[in-house]
Length: 288
Image (cartoon, rainbow, N blue to C red; front, side, top):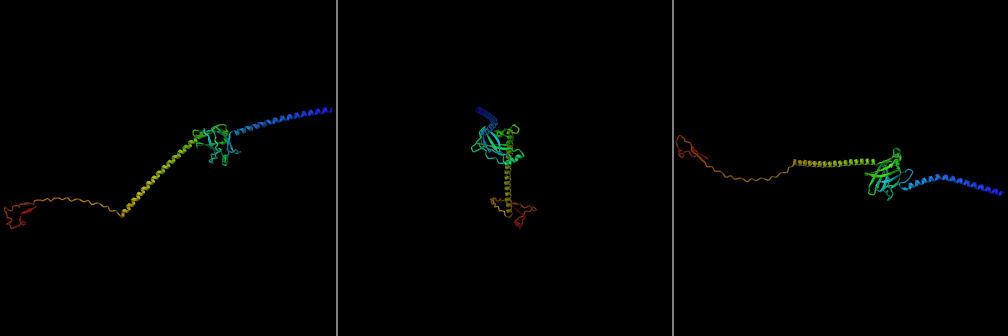
């Protein structure tokens, strides 16, 4: 009798033990469900992180951004800097690393101290510089990286720009028009500087010519003044070759003397020889 009672007690105890274990197992499964879901979420996030190649250094202060290369060429260099004018970071791509066409990478960028101080006053903008195998360098400026989670790097109409969805507003944004306006402004500035340089060079050339002309005129004036000064004290005699004129011989002209008969004196003819008057005493005149 006692043996049967003891057996029943054992059976009841065993049943209670089985029921208790079953409830405990049910409770464990219920608590494991959320843990599995959480673990699954972590696994999904981990898979997303490991799906893309990573550049930059991950940290609590780093900005995380997924960049897709839509520029049409492989990118061989990528650097970031604040638009405030600080030096750009080193090439974030590793040695021999390239970003293929339409490839997406995960970039981490930690702003510098100056960037953080500026961010306290106003939203900091950044510039991304892309390098290519052919030596081209494309600058994409004025980007608000902290408003981006995913962005496409693009190149059209000779300008670089990005397309992204704003994390703040959820709007689709493209910086292409801003890039085109900036390029037009830079071209106008470059043209103005070129014209200014050309005008300055022309003015310098003209000034040089004027200075040379003035120097030549001054030298000529000094030479003339020196010559005049020397002439005041000494004049070099000028030798003139005498001109010899051949004398012209003129044949003398002989004129026959003309004898004039003396006038009649009272009708008397006097013999000159008898009058006692000589040749000089007579009235006869011998004229030549």
